[in-house]
Image (tube, rainbow, N blue to C red; front, side):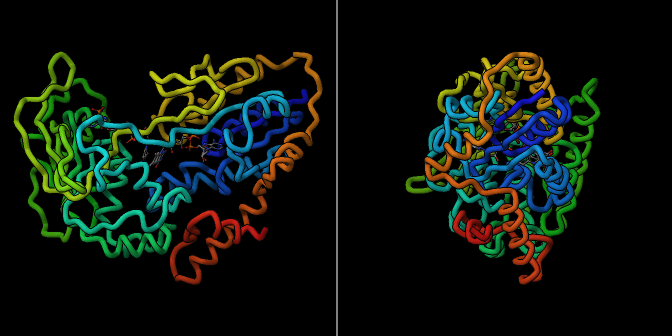
Length: 434
Ligand SMILES: Cc1cc2nc3c(=O)[nH]c(=O)nc-3n(C[C@H](O)[C@H](O)[C@H](O)COP(=O)(O)OP(=O)(O)OC[C@H]3O[C@@H](n4cnc5c(N)ncnc54)[C@H](O)[C@@H]3O)c2cc1C
Ligand SMILES: NC(=O)c1ccc[n+]([C@@H]2O[C@H](COP(=O)([O-])OP(=O)(O)OC[C@H]3O[C@@H](n4cnc5c(N)ncnc54)[C@H](OP(=O)(O)O)[C@@H]3O)[C@@H](O)[C@H]2O)c1
């Protein structure tokens, strides 16, 4: 069967979709992966924490898909700016949207837009060296910071704030960001959960890592670590046990302190021109809902990092539900010849591997729809000609490899780890050799 498919987005969902297409459709399939950045791998490159090197190594698996003879990487091509749905449907038999969930959810409390109130999405982009985020965006000049949310992203953010720059030297954190982390004046990080330890979203392995920080004591209040875990999953019981263990031990006097709090919800971010505090209200559950108890506490923080989840953004001309913040679909089918996979399909939850089965489902739907249908032949060169006519010259996979090599050279010259990220599109374009 001869089939040409465009995939929009080169994160795990996009690349697993390409892999599933090549496996399920056989040799006759040709896949183009369009990506707005010059670099592939989505959140594996610009989300997974820099010190989680073993997770980042999944890129080694994903690259093998991009190196298949019937898969092409077209970097620097943005859907909605350079091409639209009608363009792609004119050049390919089908389109699969895999653009993830790029922006933060809001908390909806007063003070959320004050300088110093920051979306975790921005902070993560900053320490990961995302080209959308300038290196001078953050100055860590306040002694106390609050991180709202008790999911795995919050744990990442807290860990990066608690580690020393020396501990992060061997990672790919850009030099300019590392310098700012080295100059950090942050001494206390509060991580805030609006429900109990048994409701926290972080996973046990990630939680345990906080207890191994060389530079920070982890403190939990005994009364907040109490939880009835009867009948709850092993993972949750494990979390509660770890937290109880921390509640029972005395701080060792390390330079930084991590306060993990539960049953506290943010009600207002305080400050005139910038954040000076975070007002919290103690909570309890009433009929399964979180309600305030009328007991308040103010943390004297100069920065509030809102790590309360990600959300997708609508793609121009593609259906989108404002309610679920996803593209409505049936097993990946959006409408005739248009499909969706990954976080854009099911919302911002799940680990990298979750996207593999998700992509496989979408590809099964796509192949069931398209196999055996008589279609007008589409000329392969069309997308190249179309992009050229719009002055868009995609970054090729080979050019990406040149960027990767430049990052390895930079790491060697600085005596750092395997790679140090280049900052900004200009540096990446220069390194690509074009
Ligand atoms: C901070 C953070 C840390 C994480 N850490 C881990 C971890 O340690 N382990 C783990 O298993 N999971 C982790 N996850 C979850 C994992 O990253 C996701 O499950 C996965 O990345 C989702 O894949 P995706 O392809 O749907 O989205 P993404 O990875 O976001 O990929 C979307 C891609 O689409 C591109 N794109 C967006 N808009 C356009 C457009 N208009 N045109 C063209 N391209 C576009 C983006 O640039 C991006 O490359 C983490 C998530 C976050 C947010
Ligand atoms: N190492 C890893 O494997 C890794 C690392 C990072 C991310 N990920 C994955 O990526 C996905 C996204 O992670 P995430 O941490 O962004 O999301 P998440 O797991 O959904 O956690 C969001 C947290 O924010 C809280 N929250 C939401 N709205 C709030 C509000 N208005 N006020 C206060 N708290 C609020 C939630 O509490 P409630 O539960 O009360 O709503 C929850 O604690 C997850 O599936 C995660 O596992 C994995």
